Length: 319
Image (cartoon, rainbow, N blue to C red):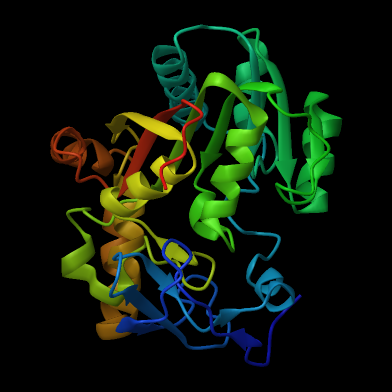
């Protein structure tokens, strides 16, 4: 469904400290799907959390997730090119290995919040984990159930039917920044985790090497789908308040394709005639390999475009 009118917007306070004192950073637009609306990104003057305000209402925001939105991807087995199957499977295996490393075991019950079409949960299932998901988009939830036989609740975390302490691991892969209240999401995760359970969270990295040079065109903003942008400090504070202890930060996601989206957005806005020739070069098969040493270095420095945090639930929320 196409969107032709500006969305309904709502002013909100900081989700972390509830202050309404903030400063404007950028006025942003949807540079991915080019849907209408202007959105103000602000930083809280009390705690530093970065968030959209005013932001779209729940009814308006759903229009910004069209059927071709990237997380709703086909199964790995359906990829035509072998190299794409390999690259996508490698990312899923890396996620599983990090969960097993920081969780301290290689089996148990895992809940993936925002599981989309169930690709990550299917990988966990293949490795012997008991897997369940939460997914708000009905078509994606149905696909995960029908294709992989997964247990998926169609709706939002907090509306789910799961019992307290039902899970060993809960994951938010590229999801927490999309939620209306990250603090409530983490509190619900704490309720669903067993004592000592693990939460894994993947978010755009505010300290990314490419945020400053690309400014409002940085892929990490992905306005208005990303309602929050986290620094390590603000996300750590949220986790502490929900009763978690941070174990580690990792940059392990390949950064090349995220980076070229920022390049594409900046070129389209400032030098549109260069978009096609430059993107043709950057997306030519094999060009990515030239950049691999650089992206390995920035990931080692924890300045990759995406960062992950692994935290253990200790059941002692910070006040």
